[in-house]
Length: 119
Image (tube, rainbow, N blue to C red):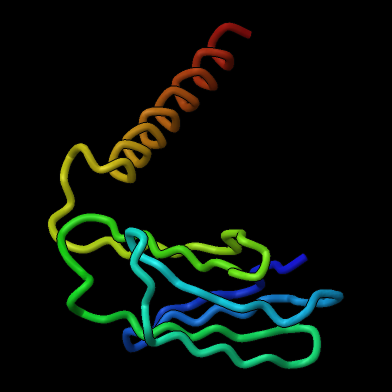
């Protein structure tokens, strides 16, 4: 089984290190909206492989772009990464989650205060 161990984005290049112990080296394809990216490099070593993907600036626009890293030999998506660009909207899911976390923290504090007062 192939598993993602680490991933980073630096200088417009995504890099993922995969544990490939007990599995043959994968044949990797990276896609965005069903279109394959051409700048994909795979370096295999014993027990792992490193995948590097140059992210073309032309693919970036407002919103969220989710890239799929696929093992074409097995026909499976083995990782993904997302890039968020542009203005953050109130309807952005992450903004909603942050708001829910803040409200949950407020409720926890109020509940603890209530429990202390009722003892």
